[in-house]
Length: 121
Image (cartoon, rainbow, N blue to C red):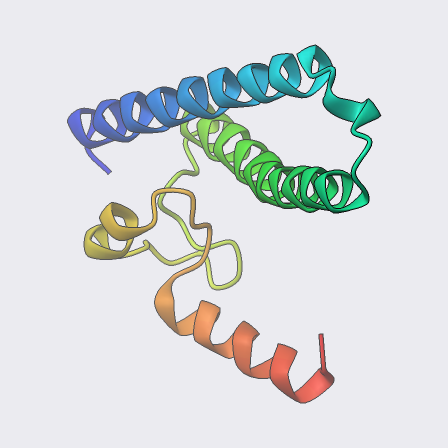
């Protein structure tokens, strides 16, 4: 992969990482700054808990994405970004543009997804 392309993906991944970290910090502030835990109405408490549960679920997904972004940034530094972890062939640029955090070419990813369905993950 050309250095110009690596710089593009590095910047793209770093911007997304910064955005996700800022979002996580905002969430922590919102959840710890909330004083409505003592709602008298059970329905209000249930709504608050459902809302918090949804926020935690979303942040959990974002946490996994942060980990993937950090792994891909490390791959850029190591010179392995854009190389499939299974077959060690280059990942198509079109795929990297669509999913910059991917570590598998489309063929290997499809194979993995098929196995997951068969095994039941």
